[in-house]
Length: 237
Image (cartoon, helix red, strand yellow):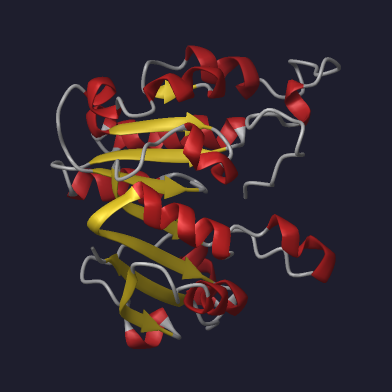
Protein backbone atom coordinates (compact mmCIF):
# COMPACT_ATOMS: atom_id res chain seq x y z
CA UNK A 1 0.00 0.00 0.00
CA UNK A 2 2.55 2.62 1.12
CA UNK A 3 5.85 2.29 -0.65
CA UNK A 4 8.95 3.51 1.16
CA UNK A 5 10.13 6.84 -0.35
CA UNK A 6 13.69 7.33 -1.52
CA UNK A 7 16.07 8.64 1.13
CA UNK A 8 16.33 12.08 -0.50
CA UNK A 9 12.62 12.45 -1.33
CA UNK A 10 9.95 14.25 0.70
CA UNK A 11 7.83 11.89 2.80
CA UNK A 12 4.85 12.63 0.55
CA UNK A 13 6.59 12.31 -2.82
CA UNK A 14 5.09 9.95 -5.38
CA UNK A 15 5.14 9.76 -9.16
CA UNK A 16 2.18 12.13 -9.35
CA UNK A 17 4.19 14.88 -7.61
CA UNK A 18 6.75 15.00 -10.39
CA UNK A 19 6.79 17.96 -12.84
CA UNK A 20 5.61 15.80 -15.74
CA UNK A 21 2.39 14.94 -13.89
CA UNK A 22 -0.68 15.43 -16.06
CA UNK A 23 -3.81 16.36 -14.06
CA UNK A 24 -6.09 14.53 -16.46
CA UNK A 25 -4.31 11.25 -15.62
CA UNK A 26 -5.05 11.50 -11.90
CA UNK A 27 -7.90 13.92 -11.17
CA UNK A 28 -7.71 13.03 -7.48
CA UNK A 29 -4.35 14.80 -7.16
CA UNK A 30 -5.95 18.23 -7.19
CA UNK A 31 -9.33 17.07 -5.95
CA UNK A 32 -8.01 15.81 -2.63
CA UNK A 33 -6.78 19.31 -1.76
CA UNK A 34 -10.21 20.83 -2.13
CA UNK A 35 -12.16 18.03 -0.49
CA UNK A 36 -12.57 19.66 2.92
CA UNK A 37 -10.75 20.34 6.16
CA UNK A 38 -10.81 16.69 7.24
CA UNK A 39 -8.86 15.43 4.22
CA UNK A 40 -5.39 16.82 4.89
CA UNK A 41 -2.78 17.07 2.08
CA UNK A 42 0.75 15.96 2.89
CA UNK A 43 2.21 19.46 2.92
CA UNK A 44 -0.25 20.52 5.63
CA UNK A 45 -0.10 17.46 7.87
CA UNK A 46 3.13 18.00 9.89
CA UNK A 47 1.80 21.23 11.41
CA UNK A 48 -0.60 19.14 13.51
CA UNK A 49 2.12 17.13 15.20
CA UNK A 50 1.38 17.29 18.90
CA UNK A 51 -1.77 19.32 18.16
CA UNK A 52 -4.25 16.80 16.78
CA UNK A 53 -6.66 17.56 19.61
CA UNK A 54 -6.84 21.11 18.28
CA UNK A 55 -7.64 19.84 14.81
CA UNK A 56 -10.47 17.65 16.10
CA UNK A 57 -11.65 20.34 18.49
CA UNK A 58 -11.75 18.09 21.53
CA UNK A 59 -9.55 16.06 23.88
CA UNK A 60 -10.27 12.44 22.98
CA UNK A 61 -8.13 9.32 22.49
CA UNK A 62 -6.54 9.19 19.05
CA UNK A 63 -6.19 6.01 16.99
CA UNK A 64 -4.24 5.73 13.74
CA UNK A 65 -5.04 3.45 10.82
CA UNK A 66 -2.25 2.83 8.30
CA UNK A 67 -3.31 2.10 4.72
CA UNK A 68 -7.01 2.62 4.09
CA UNK A 69 -7.96 0.39 1.17
CA UNK A 70 -11.53 1.33 0.25
CA UNK A 71 -12.01 3.17 3.55
CA UNK A 72 -14.93 1.07 4.79
CA UNK A 73 -13.12 -0.09 7.91
CA UNK A 74 -12.09 3.40 8.98
CA UNK A 75 -15.63 4.74 8.61
CA UNK A 76 -17.20 1.75 10.37
CA UNK A 77 -14.68 1.83 13.21
CA UNK A 78 -15.18 5.55 13.78
CA UNK A 79 -18.98 5.26 13.63
CA UNK A 80 -18.89 2.49 16.24
CA UNK A 81 -16.59 4.48 18.56
CA UNK A 82 -17.80 8.10 18.67
CA UNK A 83 -15.64 8.86 21.70
CA UNK A 84 -12.41 8.18 19.77
CA UNK A 85 -10.80 10.33 17.07
CA UNK A 86 -9.27 8.52 14.11
CA UNK A 87 -6.47 9.54 11.76
CA UNK A 88 -6.28 7.47 8.59
CA UNK A 89 -2.99 7.52 6.70
CA UNK A 90 -2.85 6.72 2.98
CA UNK A 91 -0.43 7.70 0.21
CA UNK A 92 -2.68 7.27 -2.85
CA UNK A 93 -4.81 10.23 -3.85
CA UNK A 94 -7.86 8.25 -4.90
CA UNK A 95 -7.88 6.12 -1.76
CA UNK A 96 -7.72 9.27 0.36
CA UNK A 97 -10.81 10.69 -1.34
CA UNK A 98 -12.67 7.38 -1.26
CA UNK A 99 -11.89 6.90 2.45
CA UNK A 100 -13.08 10.42 3.23
CA UNK A 101 -16.30 9.70 1.35
CA UNK A 102 -16.79 6.46 3.27
CA UNK A 103 -16.35 8.23 6.60
CA UNK A 104 -18.88 10.87 5.57
CA UNK A 105 -21.36 8.22 4.48
CA UNK A 106 -20.91 6.51 7.86
CA UNK A 107 -21.71 9.80 9.62
CA UNK A 108 -18.25 9.85 11.19
CA UNK A 109 -16.64 12.85 9.51
CA UNK A 110 -16.38 14.79 12.80
CA UNK A 111 -14.08 12.15 14.32
CA UNK A 112 -12.06 11.21 11.21
CA UNK A 113 -9.13 12.90 9.50
CA UNK A 114 -7.74 11.35 6.35
CA UNK A 115 -4.12 12.29 5.76
CA UNK A 116 -2.13 11.75 2.59
CA UNK A 117 1.29 10.76 3.88
CA UNK A 118 3.75 7.88 3.92
CA UNK A 119 3.47 5.58 6.90
CA UNK A 120 7.26 5.27 6.96
CA UNK A 121 7.50 8.80 8.38
CA UNK A 122 5.18 8.69 11.38
CA UNK A 123 7.58 10.79 13.44
CA UNK A 124 6.71 13.74 11.19
CA UNK A 125 3.10 13.64 12.35
CA UNK A 126 2.94 12.46 15.97
CA UNK A 127 4.76 13.09 19.23
CA UNK A 128 5.68 10.42 21.75
CA UNK A 129 2.60 9.01 23.47
CA UNK A 130 0.17 11.02 21.32
CA UNK A 131 -1.67 7.90 20.10
CA UNK A 132 -3.71 5.35 21.99
CA UNK A 133 -3.89 2.83 19.18
CA UNK A 134 -2.43 1.85 15.80
CA UNK A 135 -4.32 -0.36 13.34
CA UNK A 136 -2.54 -2.09 10.44
CA UNK A 137 -4.70 -4.23 8.19
CA UNK A 138 -3.34 -6.10 5.17
CA UNK A 139 -0.18 -4.10 4.42
CA UNK A 140 1.49 -4.87 1.10
CA UNK A 141 3.47 -8.12 1.58
CA UNK A 142 6.32 -7.28 -0.83
CA UNK A 143 6.95 -11.02 -0.99
CA UNK A 144 10.00 -11.10 -3.27
CA UNK A 145 13.31 -11.01 -1.45
CA UNK A 146 14.57 -7.79 -3.01
CA UNK A 147 11.25 -6.10 -2.20
CA UNK A 148 11.47 -6.86 1.52
CA UNK A 149 12.98 -3.43 2.23
CA UNK A 150 9.58 -1.89 1.45
CA UNK A 151 7.73 -3.85 4.14
CA UNK A 152 6.19 -1.92 6.99
CA UNK A 153 6.38 -4.64 9.63
CA UNK A 154 9.99 -4.61 10.72
CA UNK A 155 11.79 -3.81 14.01
CA UNK A 156 12.07 -0.07 13.32
CA UNK A 157 8.31 0.24 12.91
CA UNK A 158 7.60 -1.80 16.04
CA UNK A 159 9.91 0.45 18.07
CA UNK A 160 8.47 3.63 16.56
CA UNK A 161 4.94 2.45 17.32
CA UNK A 162 5.93 1.76 20.94
CA UNK A 163 7.22 5.31 21.22
CA UNK A 164 4.17 6.99 19.70
CA UNK A 165 1.55 4.92 21.56
CA UNK A 166 0.92 5.82 25.19
CA UNK A 167 1.18 3.17 27.95
CA UNK A 168 -1.98 1.08 27.92
CA UNK A 169 -2.47 1.69 24.20
CA UNK A 170 -2.69 -1.00 21.56
CA UNK A 171 -1.41 -2.21 18.21
CA UNK A 172 -3.56 -4.41 15.98
CA UNK A 173 -2.34 -6.27 12.92
CA UNK A 174 -4.31 -8.35 10.43
CA UNK A 175 -2.54 -9.75 7.39
CA UNK A 176 -2.99 -12.40 4.74
CA UNK A 177 0.83 -12.64 4.65
CA UNK A 178 2.18 -14.75 7.50
CA UNK A 179 5.56 -13.09 7.11
CA UNK A 180 4.10 -9.91 8.62
CA UNK A 181 2.63 -11.82 11.56
CA UNK A 182 5.92 -13.61 12.24
CA UNK A 183 7.97 -10.44 11.83
CA UNK A 184 5.83 -8.53 14.31
CA UNK A 185 6.17 -11.16 17.02
CA UNK A 186 9.89 -11.59 16.35
CA UNK A 187 10.46 -7.84 16.87
CA UNK A 188 8.83 -7.69 20.32
CA UNK A 189 11.76 -8.62 22.62
CA UNK A 190 13.18 -5.48 24.18
CA UNK A 191 10.03 -3.45 23.54
CA UNK A 192 7.20 -2.58 25.95
CA UNK A 193 4.65 -4.44 23.82
CA UNK A 194 2.77 -7.31 25.46
CA UNK A 195 0.85 -9.89 23.43
CA UNK A 196 -2.86 -9.84 24.25
CA UNK A 197 -3.86 -12.46 21.73
CA UNK A 198 -3.16 -13.93 18.30
CA UNK A 199 -5.00 -15.87 15.61
CA UNK A 200 -3.67 -17.99 12.77
CA UNK A 201 -7.02 -17.94 10.98
CA UNK A 202 -9.45 -15.19 11.94
CA UNK A 203 -12.33 -16.72 9.98
CA UNK A 204 -12.05 -20.02 11.88
CA UNK A 205 -10.82 -18.91 15.30
CA UNK A 206 -12.09 -15.36 15.52
CA UNK A 207 -10.07 -12.18 16.01
CA UNK A 208 -8.07 -11.77 19.24
CA UNK A 209 -9.94 -8.53 20.03
CA UNK A 210 -13.64 -8.35 20.93
CA UNK A 211 -14.83 -5.68 18.48
CA UNK A 212 -13.94 -7.23 15.14
CA UNK A 213 -14.84 -5.46 11.90
CA UNK A 214 -14.21 -7.37 8.65
CA UNK A 215 -12.14 -5.39 6.15
CA UNK A 216 -12.57 -5.53 2.38
CA UNK A 217 -9.33 -7.47 1.91
CA UNK A 218 -10.27 -9.87 4.68
CA UNK A 219 -13.62 -10.63 3.04
CA UNK A 220 -11.83 -11.58 -0.19
CA UNK A 221 -9.61 -14.07 1.61
CA UNK A 222 -12.56 -15.43 3.56
CA UNK A 223 -14.33 -16.17 0.26
CA UNK A 224 -11.29 -18.15 -0.90
CA UNK A 225 -11.01 -19.97 2.46
CA UNK A 226 -7.49 -18.59 2.90
CA UNK A 227 -6.21 -17.70 6.38
CA UNK A 228 -5.90 -14.18 7.74
CA UNK A 229 -3.45 -13.80 10.62
CA UNK A 230 -3.97 -11.40 13.51
CA UNK A 231 -2.00 -10.13 16.50
CA UNK A 232 -3.15 -7.83 19.30
CA UNK A 233 -0.53 -6.04 21.38
CA UNK A 234 -0.84 -3.84 24.46
CA UNK A 235 1.83 -1.34 25.42
CA UNK A 236 3.10 -1.76 28.94
CA UNK A 237 4.66 0.93 31.11
